[in-house]
Image (cartoon, rainbow, N blue to C red; front, side):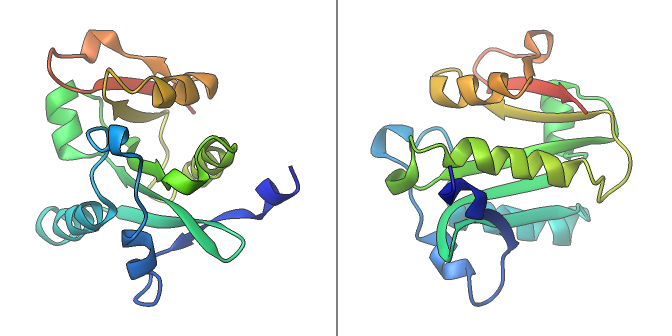
Length: 167
């Protein structure tokens, strides 16, 4: 447990972005989450073209990058696809590198992510949303363990399952 206390989130910088982009999930998980490089490109265009506030963070264990998370506020495509209400936080991407999975790092990192969201960096909100592939049972169990509830009334066949956490 001592090592888990050293988990932290760090904003991406010129010096750290390459090491975050090198992180990978297992082969059988590639369909569940975009690459970190693609995610950073998405963050850039969401910010530049749509004026969104996006927070891409590296997840670190000591000095080692072990994961990536990207958050936003009022994500237009999620609002459209899932008919979400206004003024919500959205965990857009979340991954732990294959070498560090199954060791409790994802759970600790998600707690830090939710603690950050609860500081309301973009304004007050009653909810945090996320979505995941229906086949991704590991993600489902993690999110439900934190109190996320699957919003099946917002689910559409062929899309990710949306889930909500009341803050």
